Length: 551
Image 1 (cartoon, one colour):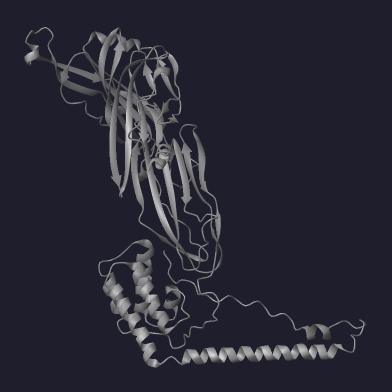
Image 2 (cartoon, rainbow, N blue to C red; image 1 turned 120 degrees about the vertical axis):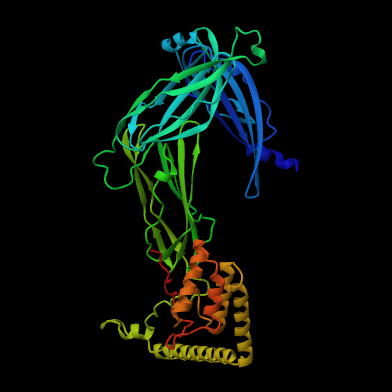
């Protein structure tokens, strides 16, 4: 047990973030140090921060979550900091839970003179848009701050109402202190994501606050006497540009970052896939500054030599405090249909980098994998080498004559070959005789057992068990059948072929109608409807292609 403790500590993941990366001198900022996987980590040493910051206080929060049976813990240390001077200040790497955090930067600017003049009031508001211009569909961040010197009551300022712009809150808001004109204020800050839907000038109207504050002139204010207070954040104007005229017909994706990947390929330690065995791949698309609704659906092109079965897509958004991060995930079951090299062609997606104001291309490179024949499939015999006697007969004229003893050697070799062929023919005859010696009653028992096992599986909800039992029953009658795709090709009943297709869909695409099992049992209740001309051969070579195609 003690030996496992170093492994657990090494598995801890530590990250450092700031709730804001731009502040004015006199404002406070919160440094969050998050530790995942080590709930017992001790508080970090913060003395390296004293040179540029005043430490106002620390807090600690521990959370435990269980997802799909897997427990995970997160320990967060919150550190309230007040910058000591203007400039680009460095948050150095800190040692937390035996690991080092990444260094951070904080830009500290001089106080806004206009804001400092407003400190003559007990309550006032500010607003800004980051950045002040952008493209259609690009996320902008609107920030509104409420400053108050004394205790106040009332509802938080409402979100802005802007025609032609999608507005959504980013997080639950921040609370911190700021110094303006030598006076300390409490600050309530809320950020909103703005996504313009059309180009042009967009006006963000003022945001108002109405509330009550304790009356410092009333000696009984402690017992509830208040005075009404109000404040208004100034209006803002943003410039929204259209997509470039030469963008084309592909999806317009203005993002800060975008990544595209395809995972799940067999490694060097994995066994190569075989015909009929699914290859499970997962495609991920993630973009910062775009919601998942703006991202295109993920797909694979039709593949030569395989059938693609898509799973249900997984989508969602998360936030990092300033930006929406949209994500799409799509899993695929790729079922090879023949042995050889299976190639997944390259996938490309162009997007517009709003940070560099240039087009970029995310790409999944082409990938090839070797596919082995199905287990039990007969290998294609190599072409027979020409007989040696033919080679001797074809010797060019003028070569030296063979010694007189050569003919009897060829006669001996030919006799040996004829004996081996006779022995092989006798062995094959004995093998077929033993196979045919099985009594009809035993064969019927094996077929009947397979049928009963299949009907029992059909009443359940496990498509993999249904597929195995159906294939086992079919092999009891036709031993050479390798997989369900081959079974469907030798059946004469369209209903039976259709339910096999549906079974494959449920197995790999996870789409199961309520009456799937009943339809499966109904189609095969009278046995297999074999084609009269379909005779499965044990020497048939590679299995035929799956007939199932997704459109």
